[in-house]
Image 1: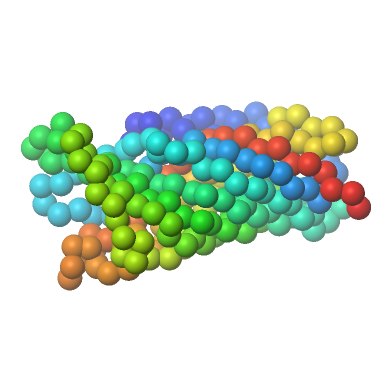
Image 2 (image 1 turned 45 degrees about the vertical axis):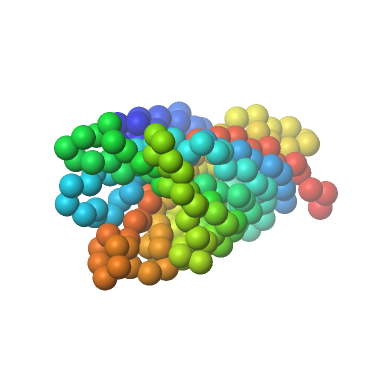
Length: 213
């Protein structure tokens, strides 16, 4: 959790120094690639004897972003990401924290959101592609049929670092929380309160190329 709090504090500092692009004009229609590094923790309850732990994903999120301006002067528009997204978190024994295992699941996701002067808020929808449970000496695949479709609440920022007539380089900061349980069935069976709800924080960059009007 300390690492997640650090990322949150970093985001707040970035927002506080962001001047919201003094030019005041909206950005044009644009599209381009992005990459982010993400870490996460299970925000749901776990059975007695188990503890939740934070971990960094072994794979970055990669994809394409797009932006549609809704006004000419105000920086207000619709942004969307199409991505290969991964979520990971640790579980460990409460009385022996060195005995831990990492759950990692990946999705094809679509994240439409509202963009307002660097701030973004929206929902992320995903189709499960793969999953694994790894410990120090074993690795087990998770059947995608056991994973539910993803609905995630997302909030963050898309903060321009550099822009010119061709496009703009952005700092991307995202925080998310699974509104749906990770598994399509209760986990463990018969106990819906133990179905994981991963929470995550991500930092990365994107480059959006301006499209001709």
